[in-house]
Image (cartoon, rainbow, N blue to C red):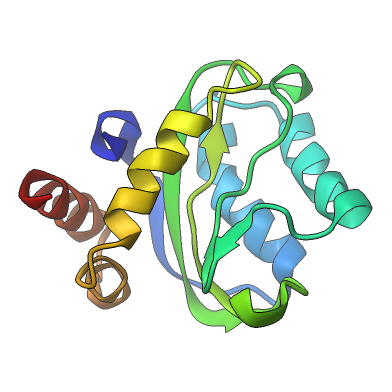
Length: 151
């Protein structure tokens, strides 16, 4: 379950971002602050998009920023970042992105379980509106827990 990895201090709402790079940095900063990832992990996540395109924009309006584990993932962690205004990642019909779920995975396939859990939540029509209306990190965490219990 996503809520097992989620801590309120890794959740940010109403985040201002000028572009996709600042959105990725803002979303991953709580994981840096908490020691889950090193600063180089953030740089590698951005470099990955610059090199390979917006591969971690997984569906309309949703991105899962992450990098290779060897780039500085210290432990598994997840955050939530809800932007005040969506930004374009150059992801075609999946743009603009408003919801980012920054992830630290310590193995190459460590993000797959989180991605599966996220897909389950995204399939619930209440999920993104609940995040969008949340005003505090605790409201985000509670919304995720509530929806997880009901699916």
